[in-house]
Amino acid sequence: MNQKQVNRIIKLLKEKGILFGKGLSDDEIFRVNQEFGIRFPNDLKLLLQTEIPINNGFVNWRYGINCENGKKEIDYYLNWPMEGMLFDIKNNSFWHDKWGIKPSEFEKQKLIALKELDKQPKLIPIYSHRYISSEPNEIGNPVFSVYQMDIIYYGVDLMDYFSKEFRFELPKSYGIITEPKQIQFWSDIVDLNNKSFE
Image (tube, rainbow, N blue to C red; front, side, top):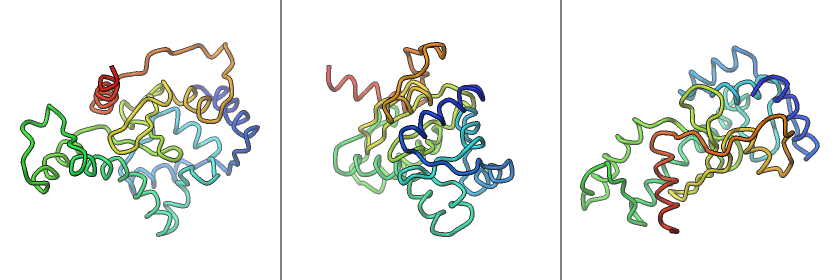
């Protein structure tokens, strides 16, 4: 996603009633990286540095680095995928095959799951329970809808996601990506969910 495309996406979002504030500065991006241990993929970073969406449901990164309540709110969203995974391990028999044999005690299950999750790309919240992977640190990462381990693709990339979430058409000149990029672990979960419906 280039600057011209970002400007167009922002215009289309504004037409749907999304409010924007001044984009994040380089210093603010650095502070987000330091405070929350994340790196925005390049397309999301470009959007947030152009203008930042401020409607309810969007993550307000500026608020998060300038106020304790804002930090708590962002920590909540960052921890949402982990909390959902632990809930499904405890209550819905979730266990990834690659983690080995599932222990009988939840505390042991939790230790293994958290250790394994720590090896995976971090998910960055965008809006509500929609997330984009921090890795690879490049444009074109898919957007996931995350509710516990009920995880699906909600956009093959950031532009596709916004067009689906807020119901507008992208210009045909932007091209069409039909297959989402594979993201370590998270794409596996999507595939597992798809198989359960086959």
